[in-house]
Length: 234
Image (tube, rainbow, N blue to C red; front, side, top):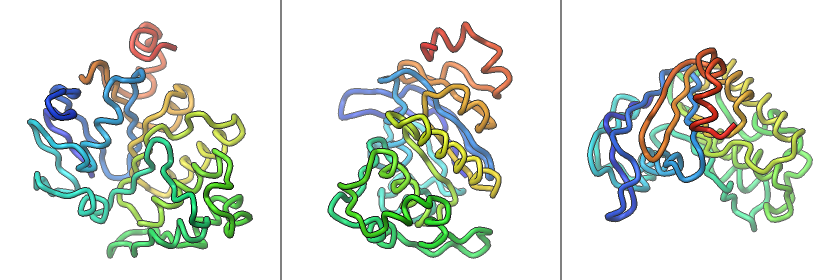
């Protein structure tokens, strides 16, 4: 699905990522963790073509063309749930969802459409005619996830999946992500909830000062309190 090889990236002359290598296999859930300011969102923006690659190579679905635009990357099969949600505040829930609909590629097992997204998030069904600006933070996050699913992505990327949300809303979103995993959705997720992300993800990467400093499975992650204390602050 996705492979980063020795990626270096940043903003103008300010380099943020150094020799970052990671991958997401088809049908797997992979997490990218680290404290604030360590380069997680920069990694996502580089994957999505919003930041230039200074060195290294990104391969998306077998394609390693270096000059892909963000639009081309998104329509190739990557659905992004960005940090801060970034929904269209003046559009209704229905308009936010339907505007982003893209038919699935041939061979995709699941076809996401308007009704299927509302089935995953019943609260959005109740609020379908409300403007995005009238939604709670949790409802906006559900909408951001639903909007990404409407593109029928082969890979779903969530940047800060549950940050700032109420506990019950966080629990609901983790349950929905577990459902997506069960259905075979490939996911790259950024979040700070160590226990929840360890239950969901198959493999983890920890980013510190723009470098991958550790990778491994959930058992290894949870059995290393000195690791999480040093790099995650938990």
